Length: 524
Image 1 (cartoon, rainbow, N blue to C red):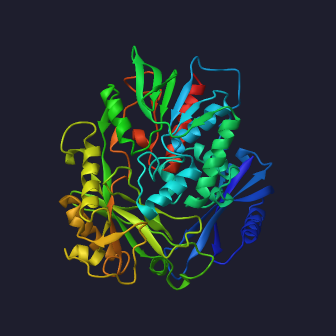
Image 2 (cartoon, rainbow, N blue to C red):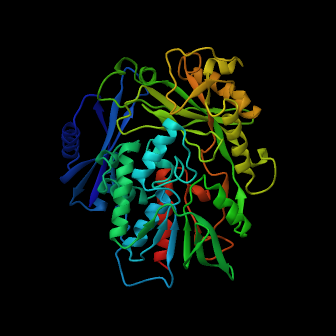
Image 3 (tube, rainbow, N blue to C red):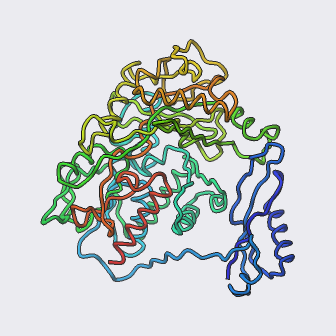
């Protein structure tokens, strides 16, 4: 039987060997004989700057029974329930083909388990493979040559490929451990298995995704890049085929829609075909940058430059009378990127590599946007809301990203020059007033929140922090409704999943949703 020993406190400067030795001593004190001890979880407790330390947990095997462990009544020792998710290739096949649309985490993990079970899915991706995608995106950032199907939002790996590769999630699901192990098997760093805030980084995530794709192909899956889902054929409220690139029909019995939150043309097509969907709330705002050294000092105090401490992050929340504002997708040691997926429209995101070694730290600061804020009752009205302000952000400087010092933003003042913080944006920037490309309810709430955050992190908004606009793609503005079988409520054989369908918010939750869809199909 496996047991977890929690709450092992370690000083900043320690080794993994030190953790395991400390754990062995505790097990001995408790009179529990164990073997195969390994590190299971590790997090930083920086609540008191004069007492920063790590909190660890280890996993071990024991011959004691569950009853014997429980009889000891040790609060820090728990029985570990092994996640069970065993799928083996079998002779079982569906009558028709399965098409998976999208190679983000939802589509990738769905296809991985379908292929493992012997279903030979066809995976279509509107963008390029990750190697060519990287070249196209870098060319866009450097030379402003835009590709509508291969960009930061579209291409192998989905929108998360050009991000921080964060694997944190608030959902509780046994599939999470399986996902982490699959990532490690395909090239991700092994420390994601025990870090409380695991991340892969865009540099390592790219090759991890590629390795997963190669294994899917080895197991019988077929992946087609530069292939856009342009229509679906429905007969008697049931999926009949997928139309790709406007001219090719792929007969299939099931379509998994793992389209991501920016596939606006696909949403429009589905709406016209009568696939039931509804407008969904999301959040919008800006990216804010500080130097990473500043954030480290604020979070770690005098230990800010200790090499045993990672680049510090933060999470901030402000609850106003009518709106909330919060930090989102915080990227320590990262850069702000041009994440546009439409011409003459500008949207930003954050990205960092595994080392998180860049000069600046950035985070989205976003305000809740309700469906009642949209200009119509159409299910796609949230898309038009996003598009309106993305076009404004582009037009005010003819494509240059609008930037403004946070302290000037609060005062409605045009910034005249940068201080300690220089924008890291992957393109050109120009000083602007953020109020010109965001609605009043967002700018007013942002001002209130920045003043509030000043009380939590000194000089957060009164120093040289730089804001870059606009951040609009925090989550999908549409939800495609599905039933308990995870199928569309209006079309049998159509499985909406992940962020694009409104059922996930990040790499891990999207991957979990993809696995759940695959398991539903396998168990039919």
